[in-house]
Amino acid sequence: MNDIPVVELENLKVTLGRREILHGITCRLGVSGTGKAVGLLGPNGAGKSTLILTLLGFLRPSAGRAHILGMDCRRNMGEARSRIGYMPENDSFVGEMSAVTFVRQMAELSGLPPKAALEKAHEVLFHVGLGEARYRELRTYSYGMKQMAKLAQAIVHGPELVVLDEPTNGLDPAARRRMLKIIVDMKEEQGMNVLVCSHLLRDIEQVCDEAVILKDGALVHHCNLEEERRSNRHFVELEVTGDDRSLKTALPEIGAEGVSEGAGRWRIVLPAGVEVEAVWGLAARQNLLVRKLTHRRDTLEEIFLKAMGHLSHTPGESGLAAPKPEGAKAG
Amino acid sequence: MAVYKRGYQRYAGRLTGRWTRFMVLPRYAWSRLYQQRLVLLLTMAAFIWPILCAGFVYLSNHVELLPGLDREFLDFIQVNGTFFAIFMYIQGACAVFLAALAGPGLLAPDLANNALPLYFSRPLTRWSYALARLTVLVGMLSVVTWIPGLLLFGLQVGLAGGWWLLANWTLGAGMVVGFLLWVLVLSLVAMASSAYVKWRVVAGAVSLAFFFILAGVSAMIDEVFRVTWGHILDPAWAVNRVWAALLSVEPLEGPGAWESLFALTAYVLLLVLVIERKLRPVEVVR
Image 1 (tube, each protein chain N blue to C red):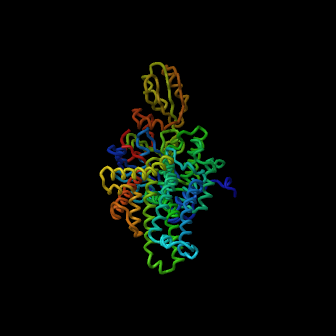
Image 2 (image 1 turned 120 degrees about the horizontal axis):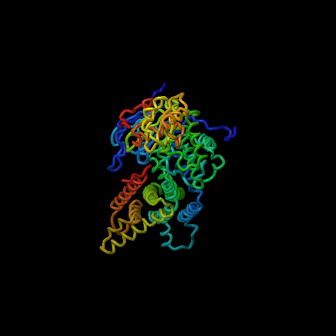
Image 3 (image 1 turned 90 degrees about the vertical axis):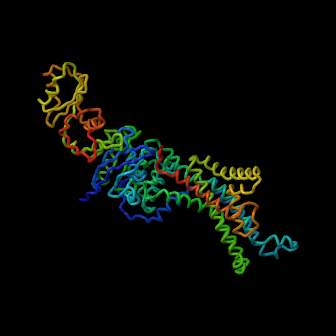
């Protein structure tokens, strides 16, 4: 199998003005042609968009190297861009064009012959749910429709890699579900690699197979979500009243691990095969009154909070199958 | 199969060549431009003067149709450098208004709607984008400047014969070169103003103001300092001076053709710099 990484960064530094935004990131993300999605996570100002803009060749690295689909982002961008689709975060369109003309023009710019471009424009607009509105001018579209039109132009030419910057921003729940379903289809049905940049953990967890977390321009975590899902661990948020000091030492009785967040709040990870009832039993044995017990599997949130420094320790960390990136800071 | 039943499949067919892709933007832009009634009307109006000039060329070659006219008038209706200079002044002025009307509509909407990242994420560089937009304006302005000029020249050659061509070929070449220089300046002014202002109507006004304000400033300098070199700041004057040299007609009072050409080159470089600064996929706030 071809093992060219989708994105390969070697000590990548990007400086805007006098400010260094990315501080020497080194990592290999995804494998080209495998139809997998990589999530790029981080709080606002972490450097996600800067990284994407650098990968697209819009910003020049001040040091280090960035490769996309095996091609250097400085030297081979002409070729790389014909194999990439990009959906920017902000409103981007040509206002006085109908959606079908806009998408057709973008397809032709990517190298499709005019007739094929027209066919694909119609096809992709139906695919993203704008079939009935495809002859309307883009400036008359709602925000959600514009997001879909941006997605349509990004995939009309059938790129190998689709870069999506905050694709679910401003979408209502139904439109968000549709967007995520299309992203999953893109990778599973069409075999496209997807690079999704978002600050919404649930979106990343839902569609991505791999995730990297950026903080203050540095890569702080790199995890394989596919393996996380396979590990089938259960997370429990517990809130109790009473003396819970001995709960930490009692948790291993049921094979669980946990951390206290103070004021009777606990985050507990249950191994496969241990049901949530065991926590109730343990609390009863410890004479604790359970005020709240939430059972969930939002593992990425744990990882994210830990990477951000909001949690000192992720429950069940020893069981995590997350690959540690080269050059990544300890979380 | 109906398109809505087909479902999306990745495109896997052949791709077009680099030049075909380069012409995509001009093709779409031209079709959008000529859908605007004002542009179409102004373009059509710009043909009135060439048609009148064609009538003049015809009459000057058929003096037998004008019996009873005195010698002075017959000397006046000659197709020479002065004739082409007058033709160029009027067509050049039409081109200013056409560029101000149509030019900003090419760039301003892309900048206002943040469309540049979409273009530049495709195999299209900033320079090829700018060149494609320039091609649109140069093409559109050529239709009302050197192309009708060359047709007039051809008409004259057809009516006057090959000897006239041998004696006056520099007029044709000078007209084409002179018009191309003016078209380049106009296109860059329109592009730079729309790159700077982003709002189409204001950008059109700015590109007109560029010529009027500079003409005013140059006149002011001349008056205040009692000099003639101030003219050089007026691009319209400078291009007229270059045209006069190219068509070998009596030059205007003021700086020479080379100085004027130098001033126009400086303007062109300045405008290219403005466009280069503004046409970026992302605006970096430093």
